[in-house]
Length: 94
Image (tube, rainbow, N blue to C red):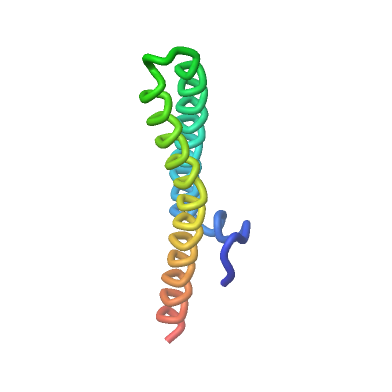
């Protein structure tokens, strides 16, 4: 079963719940990155807050890196659920 397939997200209630949880984490990372960059940009107007601005850009960049990591982790997690379902079906048939 390939990654990033819509049917992986809808197979069971567990997979739907898992997908929703990862989407919430992804959205939180999105907001965190956006706010970090926005506040960092504003802080660059004053020399005294330049270091804080730089750190906010670093935090925002890390959050942007987290987003694709969350998506890949979600898909691998969903894929592993599918494999468990397939093994359970085979066990029932024997």
